[in-house]
Picture 1 (cartoon, rainbow, N blue to C red):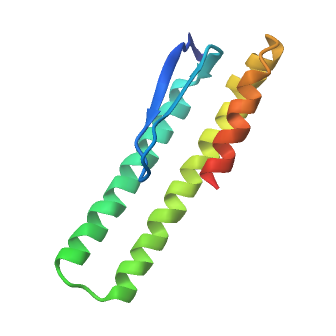
Picture 2: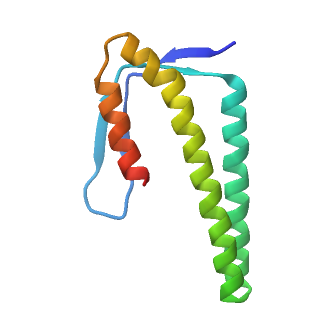
Length: 116
């Protein structure tokens, strides 16, 4: 059974530039618990990859090996992003559009552009 809740909150993004991003939305999010668990497991694997990269750099390991590990990390992040996009389209966006909320689609398009 899918978990359903409504978000009305602001997002603040910390990026490597001098201005902050702030936006709000009020469309419903529908997240299946098994999807959420799978996504959290993928995040844990990404964190593990990054911790390994950090240790490799600290140990002065071969740069080619570090780059290989970074490539694996990037692939894991991209895979997670694709999962989240699919989940968002299948549940959150489809429900928002059913409710007539076209702002959700515009917000999602902007998020995709930032991701890629």
